[in-house]
Image 1 (spheres, rainbow, N blue to C red):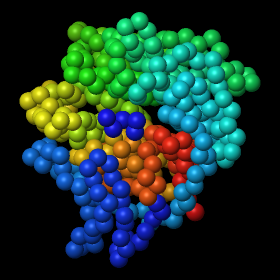
Image 2: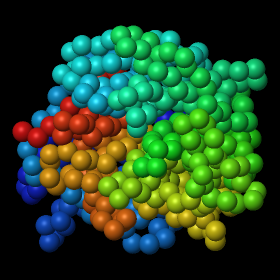
Image 3: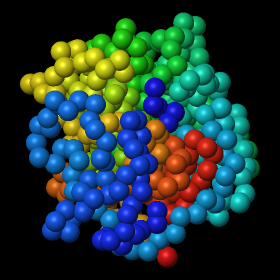
Length: 408
């Protein structure tokens, strides 16, 4: 299961060595006769017979950053980081899968532990997962997080909140505000990204828990697995959620596999990244009341190589991904870049696990028009990315590193 999961070169005349995930190989990035870069992926598809629904849905033209930039490791001892956000003063708040948070200075040199969180089930892909600050954090110091909560019968994705103490050493008065039931005795596909909408309510992503017996829940409207949810800060259904009679009121969209990435673009639109099985990793533009197809529709295969279900890629009543990859790149956290490298502005940055890189997607009018691979030479599983308050891009990896990518 691929879920635990560069410095610029001149455009022409030099070779770019790229390490990609799954069954990809290190290769040269090719240039077309008219001087354009081909897409950096050169590996054979797992599903060569599966054709995209529209032009530009996969393997678009490659792009190459022309702005000089630095890549630094500013901390290399973060153990098991899962999510990174900025505090208002520019420091970082990073979750550790084991069940605590770290506050890290802006230069990466000072790390202090935040304890007092509820118990987590950190087997497999579980543990302390995403984190988000209350939009009113400056006055109420409230922090929200997702985690795999151990209970009788197994575990589930849960969302909790609590107050960061004045001395920043602990979380006070924590309480669980939402549980994505049904509970299941497994250790995969918790989803778990959190992001606050402009209206002050909270989006939550949940996985379908991976196994064949739980997969159907992604299509069940009376269960919280395989969904994007929207809740209030008290865990109640957001008032503007879809009013669909068969749906639980917290559900915003259905048909998701393992959505480990969510981000808002500059227009306030919600984007989601979810891992496919063997191929079929997706970027989706999330709209209320929509069905994103899993486990009926996918561009991927079972890990065995067999078709998923009927092996279909389009179905009436389901949404197509804006973009997909085959073979898998195993994306996790995503963010839209807002920093000081002008050509990256509003580009989506994607942390890749088995893919061991950051993917930069250029998106225009909600369509992907360019793809670049960054940090591929580091051969590190990128767990989350952050467009920092200081204008730099940051990333955390499963090897415990904190990267800073900044304009020279």
